[in-house]
Every structure is written in C-alpha cells, then in structure tokens.
Image (cartoon, rainbow, N blue to C red; front, side):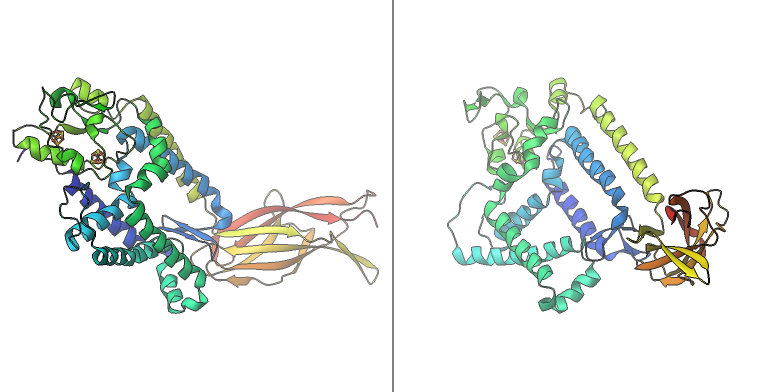
Length: 450
Ligand code: SF4
Ligand code: SF4
C-alpha cells in the first residue's frame, strides 16, 4: 500500500475546508463589519472587518493588483493548482458527476471511469439536474451574501415581490450554473475559461505539472501520435486506468495538454496499478526539471522570489493605506453664487455659502462640528460660522448634507479693485472623540473694494 497516492482524497478535504470557510465567513461580524462585503445598496466596502466608504475605494487597485500578481505567482509555482483544488467549476463537477450521478443515482456505474457512456435514464437524469439546481440555489445565495449581507438577504427573500432584482439574479444565475455544470461540464474549462488559455504562458521548466514519466513508463506517443497501448519497454502496462478516470478525457502520456486541470486522478489511478508491482505511480506531480534530474521541485527561484517581493510590497501598501482610514469624511462644494453682500445698517456683510457633505464612517454614532483654522493651526478670527450653529449627530455610516454659511468679520479687501481669494482651512471633528477629525482646504471670496 505504500506506493498509493491520495491526491483525490486530499482535494476533497481541501474542497470541504474552502466551502466551509466561504459559507461561514458572511455570518461572522466584528464591530458590525464583515470580512468581505461589497455593498452596492449602502455604497460601502467591508474588508478584513473594517468598513470603507465607496469614496475610499483607493484600496481597490491594491486588492486587484494583489489578486492578479498572486495568480501569476501561484501559476508559476504550482501550475493549474487553482483549477483542481479550488475552482468552483471543478468542485461542482465532482458534486454532480461523482456524488449525484455516480454515488446517489447510480446513473454512472464506475467512479473510476469518467469516459464510459451509460444507457440514458431520462427520469434519473432530470432528477439529478433538479438536485443540482437546489445545490446551485444555495451556492449562488452564498455568493450573493458577499454583496447583500445574509441578515438583509433573508429579509429580502421574505418579500420577494419587492426585491425582484435580487430574486431574479438568484434564480437566473442558479439556472446558468446548472446548465454549465450539467451540460457544458469540462468543455467550460477547455473552451471558455480564459485562465486555461493564459496559464501555459506562465509555466517554466520548474513549474509543477502532472507529468508522465516516459523514462520509467516507456514512450507511448511520438509527435502526438499513439504508437502503442503498452510500450515494448517500460513499466506502463497499458491498462489505461489513467485515461479512463480523466475528467477532461485526455491521455496524459501524450505530454502536457491545455485540457489538463491538474486533478491528479490519473496519478492516483496509476499508483494503484503500479503498487501491485511495488512501484511508484508513473504519473507524478512534479516539474519537468525535477523529473529530469530526479530531484525535488525548485520553488525558490528568481521569478517566484520576484513575485513574492512584489506581493509583499503590495500587502504592506495595502495595510498602510487601510490603517490610514479616516473615521469621518467631508466633501466641500462651493455654491454657484460665489458670495453675497448685505448692507445692514450701513455696514457691509460678506457671506460665502458652501455645501458640506459629512459622513460618519465609524462603527458608532458621533456628534460632529467644525471650526476654521489658520495655516498654523490657530483659530481663524477673521471669518465666523453663521450656519450651522450647533453640532449635529450622525449614526454609524450615516451621511448628511449641510448648507454652511461663513461670514467675514472685517473688511478683508481694503486695497485692491478686484475680488480676493482668501484660503481657508476647515477642521471638522467629532465632538465626543478628539481622535476623529479631518482637515479640508477651501476658499473664501471677498469682493473688490466696495
Ligand atoms: S490528465 Fe490527469 S490531472 Fe490532468 S485532468 Fe486528466 S486526470 Fe486530471
Ligand atoms: S495507469 Fe499507469 S500503467 Fe496504466 S496506462 Fe496509465 S500510465 Fe500506464
């Protein structure tokens, strides 16, 4: 038994762990924030249990860069490890083909033969599709929880007629998923998935792949043409167990092919055969270089170290940028009327009006107000706040627009015959927490000498 490999079993355990994490994660909240939530309705992003407003989406480029370079790194290192070990397409195919069709409904008779077509049992096939559609509904709901949190999602489902968009997406995407898994099957991996097309560009001689050991097994194919079922010399006995079990219907003994999803079921199948002769599987998960030199796969090399360094830099930038998150936001817009002049009892009053958009991006309610400061941080005594006069309360995540009117306390323009622009600094702050504040620059326009 010592030569038998258990990649398939390990893949199933990996699927189980990933599924559990993906399923449970939307229900976990810290400080009322999710691990990941892109909430289009409330225009907010939760990442690593921190809430960001959509105006703070400066984190997105870092996340996308991390994701793409991460994929390049993993592919260079371990080939299509994503395809067989984490991709939902492969996982759902295992559920549909191996669990529902083979184990449950016995439409397929042998889990080790994914090539053989069995007489069609129409009723059982429809039943199998229906079972999968139910699973699709759960899977798509799980996916949607990363956009509509579960607590709101289930509330919406209580009144489906009021939330037709969500219900429509749920049913349509589930239908599409069912069609994909039950009809497209591995054709999706071969013809549709863009990752399959680009991944081979990232491969090098040290990338882990599923490789048939021609030296030990013997040559079966030359220039992609099959010479023998069983080579005249070599350990391959031509049983074709590796071909029968392949979900993408290829013969790995032909060499690396675009269709191979790295599931390693062929390696497990061959290991069972070769074990009877006390030999190791002729199909290995290794690199071309490692197989040639009979050594271990070289993971640390110039390319992978380079990717690692870039990933590390992005991660550090992401953490630094994320930790500088402001707990309040303030946008200032000047009104179309630049200034107004009132003559009160022979005294000129110059006012400027603005629209301030405040947002509480903290997890708890706060009272907010603002002051005008000089460049050096001291209080601006030339301009006073006419409106609003009092601090106002904002609940966690709440936004409010405030019309702000500022008035010049004295003549700021006694010398020139043109309007002067006075730069001003606004410090907006939470009255109840001195750590929450932002500074914004704006201008106050004082008209030409009146
Ligand atoms: S060749 Fe092997 S590893 Fe590749 S898809 Fe087929 S069974 Fe999976
Ligand atoms: S399972 Fe192994 S021994 Fe059988 S045909 Fe494939 S490579 Fe040869």
